[in-house]
Image (tube, rainbow, N blue to C red; front, side, top):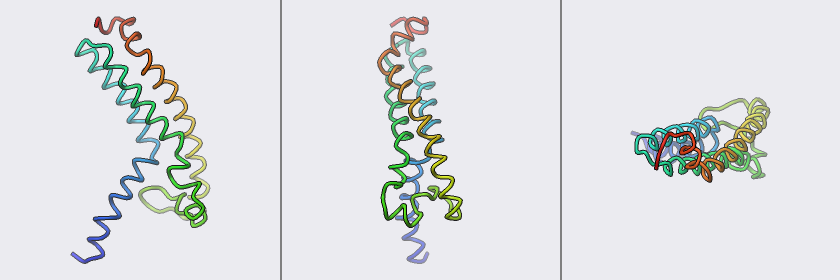
Length: 140
């Protein structure tokens, strides 16, 4: 294995993976809903209503990442913005003009979903146990 290939494996792949986790709002949307559903199932199985409220914290966190996607992808960093690196997706390359047009649209979609997730996550975090008890899913 050449030295450049090894450097790519050691530095570039973890950096791109971390960038993907931070800016891919579809993954964060999936993570928020799946944590809510898994927590609901776990709460029902264990018959403990307070377990459901923990998912609200994860959903709120996912909403925060989606809301601040512009900042996380580097859109406010003058160097990354001017070179076009901030507009590129985490994996793959787009032509600069296409990436520059697509990134703001994705930011807006992510922000809308993020605000919804923050509101729902906060309500679940604060009142999830009461909701589960009121729906008679759990007794404790």
